[in-house]
Amino acid sequence: MRCVITGGAGFLGSHLTDLILSEGHEVVVLDDLSTGSLRNLVHQISNPRLQIKTVNVRNKFEVDGPVDIVFNLASPASPPVYTQRRVDCLLINSEAVLQVAEFALAKGARLVQASTSEVYGDPLSHPQREHHWGNVNPIGERSCYDEGKRFAEALLSAMRLERGLNAGIIRIFNTYGPRMHPYDGRVISGFVRQALNNEPLTVFGDGSQTRSFCYVSDLVRGLWLMGNADHSGPINLGNPVEQSVLSMAHLIRESTNSSSEITFLPLPSDDPVRRRPDISKAKEELGWEPLIRIGEGLSQVINWQIEMQRTYSEQIS
Image (cartoon, rainbow, N blue to C red; front, side, top):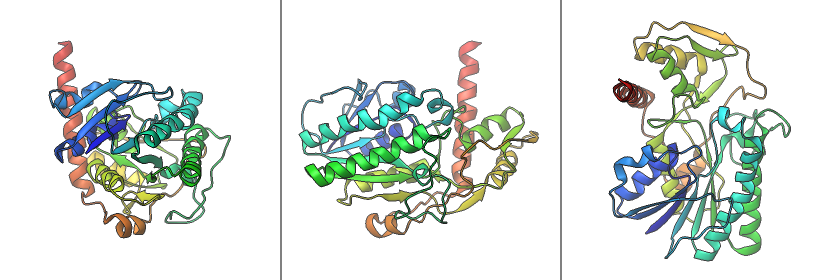
């Protein structure tokens, strides 16, 4: 098959590219490199089944030849990034989604949209199931991302009903792994960076808020399965093992043998108190569930950040 991945040079996109290439298929990566990086794909540059194009998918774009599946991962997902690019985030999840959908329709391709657990907001029910409509503040600090993704879901659903678009929506819960930038603003990547440098581990609130952490190889496997399914979704993808942020800080400090202290800062506005996916639909419809346990995944992130720091030190020395 021949697949197009928008945002393919990003954290998730590059891992999905690796998976699809390993299955023997072709990949066309489209990325404007505003948040993604070609460093994430450098190990695949010589692969004849990979093509990389620098494209802003907010504008109409073309890819020569047939396309079987389009994975739309084009969107800033890092809180420090999208809160500095609020309007851009909203337009990427509206204008760009429309362009990608029109492209998929023209190619007769299946479209998989990367949505997010943020559409549930600060959820009123627990765990989160796909039929819950969410509790999102439309004018809050995080609304550019939350509402942008909700609009993308609504747009694709309308195009499926009106124009026969073959689209499937995946709601992605907290994901971690190598290639996630240490300053991405996510729990695990940030704690690992701080712990390796013996800096204070900054916990927001009292740390009792919970998250469910899914390793990246599990997540992209779910995306690939959705690409080869005919389900419209939405389908949750995430690890149903729920952990508090404070317990994760302690675990990472122990795993890195760090002397870091744990400090507490005010909880950001609209930060969800609890987050855990119900993955019954993913199991039933896709035959998917996560396989990588937190200890194994953490060791991969820690080793990757250590290697990245070593390479950087050698480059500037």
